[in-house]
Structures are given as C-alpha cells and as structure tokens.
Length: 426
Image 1 (cartoon, rainbow, N blue to C red):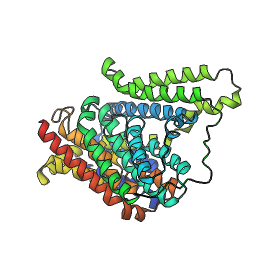
Image 2 (image 1 turned 30 degrees about the horizontal axis):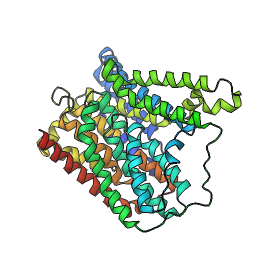
Image 3 (image 1 turned 90 degrees about the vertical axis):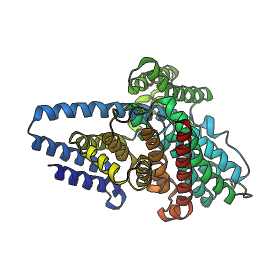
Image 4 (image 1 turned 60 degrees about the vertical axis):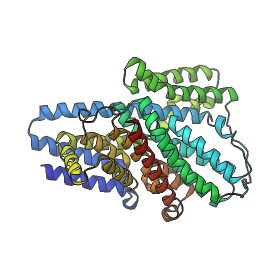
C-alpha cells in the first residue's frame, strides 16, 4: 500500500510541476491525486470508520485555509473593482528609472505583506504599463516586482499562502514571524534591487503614449473608503486572532461581512447596472477558484502521506542523511524554485510535529523565509512569477539570464542574515 501511495503522489506532483508543458491544469492533477490517494488508503486499511474520521480532520484543517483565502481574495477584488489601488499607484511619479525602481520595489514589498504576492504583482505590473513605454524597461521592473512581492509575503502571516498555512497551523505567530523574518526578507529584495537599479542608472523614464488614469465610475470618496477599509480588515485579522483566540478565517469572514454591508450602503442609490460590478457578490465571481481548488486537492493529498506516517519516515531519513536542519530547509527553498511551494510546505508541516518543534521554532521561521523567497529564483517558481510571465510575455530563459542570479544572491544573503540573527538571539 505505502509503495502505491508514494507512486501516485509522485506522479500527481510531477503533473503539477509540469503543468505548462502538459497543458493540464494543476488543480485537476491535485484533485485526481487526492481522490486516488484517499481511495487507496481506505481500501488498503479496511477500516472505513477510522479513515472517515481522519478525512474529517483533514477537511477541517483544509477548510480553515480555504475560507481564509477566499475571504482575503474577495476583499482584494472589491478594492480593485473600486480602483482603490489608485490611492497608491497615482502617487508614484519620478523622472529616473533607478529612482522609480527603488520606489516600486519598496511599495511592492510592503503592499505584498498586507495583500498577497500574486495580487500585488498584478497590481504593480498593471501600474508599470501606465508609467513605462519601453517593454525592455518593464521586463526589468517585472523581475524586481516578482522578487519584492515574494520577499514581502514571507515576513507577514497574510502575505503568502505558505506563511498563512504555517500561521493557521500554529507553527508561527504574528509578532514572532515579523521580528525574525523581516530583516532577512528585506535583504533578499534589497540586494537584487541595488544591482538592477545600478544597471538602469542615468536612464530616464520613457512614458507610454497614453498615461491617462482610468478610474472608472467610482468617486474619490468611494475609492479611498474601500481601499482603507479593505486594507484595514486584512491588517486587523492577526489582531483579531490574538484577542479572541478564534481561527483567522473567522476574522476574515467577519471583515468580509462588514465590507459587504458598507458597500451596499454606499451604492444603495445607484442603478443596478451601475453598481453591479462594484458589489461583493460580483467580486466573489471573480476570485481565482482554480487556485482555491488546487489548495484543497494538494492539502488533502499530503494529508494521506501524513496519516500513513510516510512524511515522518522521510523526516527521519533527511535528518540521518543531511543531518543539519538549516541545510534541509535551505534545500526546500531552492526546490521551491522548480516546484510549487504550497505542497512543499504542506509536506514539511506533516514531516515535523509541533511536539518536537514548538511554535516559532527555528525550523518553522526559516521555512517561511526559504519557501517564500526561494520561488523567485526561477519565474515558474511562484504564483507571482507565473502571473508576471503571462502579463508581460517574459521568456523563461530571459529571466534565467537576467534575474535568476540576482534572486539567488538575494535569497542566500537573506538566509545568511536569518541564520546569523538566530545565532545572536539564541
């Protein structure tokens, strides 16, 4: 049974990693893999009651992450529908490419920590189209946006899916992850940013032919209200969890209700056709359900490996073979440049128990950093990279040639900083 489970998981994992060459959506591969794994486990065990209970536990843990992500994605869609991000983007103006690069890098870094790296990448690349006329300039900016978005997501419990998983799972807490990973994450962005800004020094910003801001049919009051309310709700969720000790998904759903109520009140006098695209109901139809389904599939698939103790055995083998935890986590981060970091982190959470490695242990914090920033090394290594690849038609080998080495140096610089910082603090 164990051999069959491992083979099915490896095949499903390969299909997820090779999504683009195979032209098969990774969500389909994850769902088929999860279905086959649970079927194999149930048939081989012969105890439907015990397997049913384990499946119920796994669904409960998965649902908490899924509800949180759905709520956060919907809030971001509502803000975007109101052109709320204009509050930030219209203030970004400078005549030099190098100055603009620094500005964009830091805005992306901090914005990613309260939204998520995928949404931030889409928002910032859309902004670059309004500010930069030359495609070559936009390619360099896209590379830095990917690095900055992934770095920004690594130090915040709501900035990256993998960090959110660790936060909801109880492996990390809000203040501890910010204190420990902020400086390493910042360095992982600043190092590549410094090199790229140096390459672009002295070059002027070439604006596109049409730089008019399209703010749609929303007023400035509506844009400001929905932006600050949406961001405020996202930022308040960690505080809600700390004060009430309720799971984060409850905080995000509570905030979603408030945003929905305010939106309906603000637009109550408008005609249905004018307000339809601004409603939260419309935002729910625009969230990326394919990604949500992928998370469900992969988390349920990894749960089988956890229940069959395959991950525990793998952890013991890694400890015996590699020996050093820091090296194991560093390798996981490098591997996340090639394959999706969600299943890697899910597997790591199953490999190491909270009894052995309590909350805010070195292992979890370093994993949050490495899995979050390692994906920047290749353009296919993160959702932010894949989104940028599609939006700006970035060639895989152009990224390897121009950005990968910078991202790798930044990743190693941040990792070294975390290890030194951890050594000094403990």
